[in-house]
Image (cartoon, rainbow, N blue to C red; front, side, top):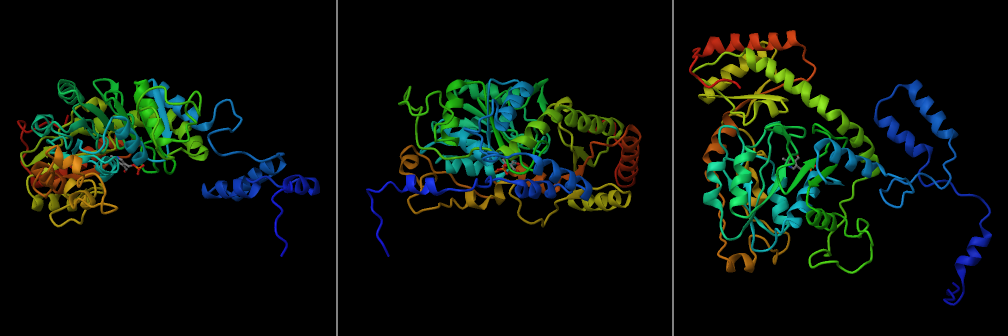
Length: 455
Ligand SMILES: Cc1ncc(COP(=O)(O)O)c(C=O)c1O
């Protein structure tokens, strides 16, 4: 075989031989494979094929969110929608909620030798992102709202604590007033995890606008979401820059991409959590629908709750802000597991979808005591820094995890009964649901006007 002559200009010789125009990298077939995913009818697919096939795709569309030649990429449109709707100065679209959390924690200064207070009920991704940022999660128990109990926070704060990460769970809302007050008193950053309550409000203000940074998952199962996506919000330019640097270390976010650092801590080795244009195209539209979706859920939940009686053996979930709930779930705690099982059976027989976890339920990564990679202080490599970091030990860190650390969460998580709600229920549907629930409750429990009200 002839050896390449390194002094020869091959590119010139090859390009002069090109006869035909190539096909675009992303062509009609690729577009059709996306359209087919959405279950359009045969006729519609044919029309889409005809429309796309007619287009001169030239070099082809470009689905990256940079250098795409558009005045505003879909990712930028999504970020603009987030800023406008949620009322913040800065937004970064990323490719998952976990990516958002990792970026936010690093931006907030989580690193070797630091601790972050995480809720006992939330999702594993929050504490995992603390560990990936080389910090150590410390779990804080919840109260009857299933959210972080503000009265338990202060006793967990040490000189290593740098942030509190309240998670708004299952459409609910944390007591942000109390949490922010404690954080400010101790000079701690707050990273809100809004993944499960996008569009929720606390005292009339959108969740995600209280913390120094906030994170959303925009995955398929969330209020807003197409497939896999995430969002970071902040009002602080420096935090936005640092989160960007972690999420997009190629520096495409910088006014001058290759300029030296403008200040200490601006540049560091990050990764690539960029959101894709296809995801952003869907999310930008969905985000604009979010307020109406949340309103519908909230109306349904309010209509049902207003009609429910109060019963001695049933405690409704405490709502930190009943008007700010996203309302895709209704929850209560029966006095015992046995009563819970009877209520669930009877509710289901009445046509009401509901579920308990029960006493012997399988592991679930929404409760701290099942988050085994954290509880077992696992590490990816033997010298991994987080739980096992010399810096952490030098600073007196010796976290210990076990079921029982957060007894309220352990008890409520298994005992609670969850009734998923449908945003499209009409007023008369809501009345029927409430009446059916009252009938079941009255069969097994004693009505008691002094019991905790539903809202
Ligand atoms: C509270 C919470 N935080 C973070 C995440 C992680 O989001 P993602 O799956 O987009 O990485 C989830 C996902 O379910 C979640 O519920």
